[in-house]
Structures are given as C-alpha cells and as structure tokens.
Length: 231
Image 1 (cartoon, one colour):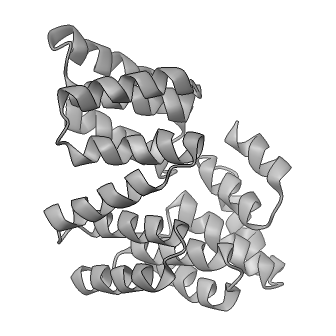
Image 2: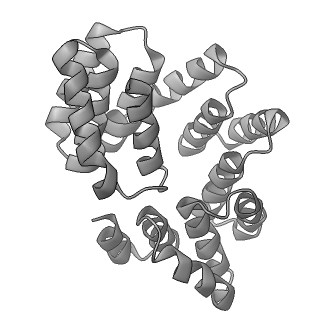
C-alpha cells in the first residue's frame, strides 16, 4: 500500500494526474496505514509531502517530516523529500537535497530517476558541468525522457533556448503524453518565436493536468498566469 501511495504522489508531482483527483483518497490511505502503525516513517513523510505540496501548510509539513526522520534517520528518500518539499522552497536550504540526491545515486547507481534528480539539484546549485556529466551517465543507462526534460528545463531557465529545444524535442519524442514535457517544449518554441508550433501543444495542455500550463507560463515569464494555473 505504501509503494502505491508514493507512486500516485509521484504522478501528481510529475504532472501526470491532477492533485485534486488523487490527494484526498491518498490521504485517507495513509491515515489507514498510520492506524496500524503510528510511527510508520514512510507514511509520516507522505503526509509531510501532502502538507507541503497540496495544503501549503509548512508548519505541519516540517513537523511530519521531522517525525519521519526521527523514526528512520538513515532513510535517504525521506531526507531527500524533506529537502525538496520543505527545506529548499521554504528555508532556501538546497544543500540537504543536494547531499541526499548524491547519496541516493551512490546507493542505487543504475536508477535513472535518482540520477535525474541529482542532475536537477546540481543545476539548481549552479554546478552545470557536473550536472551535464550526471546526465550523460544517466543516458548511458537508458535514453530516458526525464533526463532530457531536466536538461531542457535547465537550458530554458538559463536562456539557452536552442540547446533547450534539442533536449525538449527528444523528451517529447520519448514521452509525448507528459504534461511537463509538453509545457517545456511549448515554452521553448514560444521563446524562439515559433508560436504557431507551440499553439498545438498548448491546446493539448489545456485539457491535461495543470502543471504543464503552469510550467509553460513560468518559462515564458508570465508569473501571474503561472500562479493561476498552480491554484
């Protein structure tokens, strides 16, 4: 049950499913787990993630993550989630997530997801060469859309739109169904003055989970519209 809950939450965070369609039932499932095991660290961290991502209740999120870490101090996944969902966005402390992402790669070196997250946090820290090296290492394991997406987003944020387009188009080839991929590709095309090509993607995005449109508006610097879609 715990694995299923986290899989569903990842689908929400990744923009595959809308949060309002998934989170209420997920929360009920986690509470049922805690009825059987009140100190279940994974369940506590799941509620911490929901408090941060869905409720915007930062005090509750911090409390739940701290309880989870107290129960399972060696669990790198919980520390990583605490870093990305609370410490970084709320306290501007990126080092914990960066450190945890590195340890997760060491723990499971063949995980493309772990390497993609490591690449993401290296990019956020401005360590671009190491991030590129991590991306290359991941692509040697599998030519996965997530790596191309992370690099496309990174190039776009840095204003390197031609290189962003190469990565975004490959991510789209591999995962044309993914809202994040559609959002970043539409944004890069718009930034390059190719609005007509972007329009078809935007039509699809409007009926997809909202994260894709939020990402699009962020990358074209329309913060107000991004906030509307985030809500």
